[in-house]
Image 1 (tube, rainbow, N blue to C red):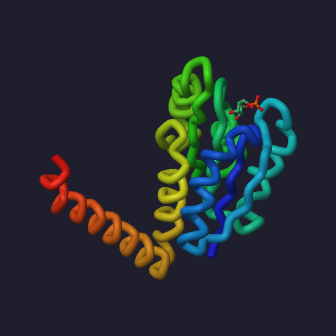
Image 2: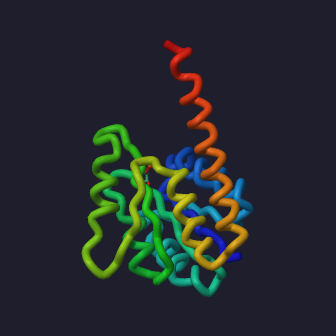
Amino acid sequence: MKKVGIVMGSDSDLPVLKKAADVLKSLDIPFEMHVYSAHRTPDEARDFARAARDRGFGVIIAAAGMAAHLAGAMAANTILPVIGIPCKSTVLEGMDALLATVQMPSGIPVATVAIDGGTNAALLAAQILAVGDEDLAEKLAARRAAEAKTVLEKDSGIMDRI
Ligand code: RP5
């Protein structure tokens, strides 16, 4: 199976990526995690993106906060699909990173998930890999079915909670 590459701009982003790692582990998807910054370690970030396809990665998740250009920088250096996670910061609460990550100019796409959306980033990565992997597709379908069951259990008990 192809690996997922997880890159974060700072280890202060780790709590968001921990959510992504938990999802990937639950689906038995191999992944590698790194701290590479587009501005503090631009050479390492670029080298990772350029080598990723040959190293067996199928998708890259890139998370950064503030003037978040890590996902765009990754996407500029690979044709692998790149999923961007805008991370929340104290001053603008993630709106800065959201706009920086989502507003990619035409030609270099980044699939942006919600602010701090580590779970959905991993699920989207899994869905991309599942296009060519029937076992993984079945695991994703089972996960959705389990979530639906949980919601319906809540539905059946909601009147008792008022
Ligand atoms: C970004 O700046 C990182 O992705 C992080 O979200 C933010 C703050 O980084 P630290 O100052 O906590 O290292 O590059």
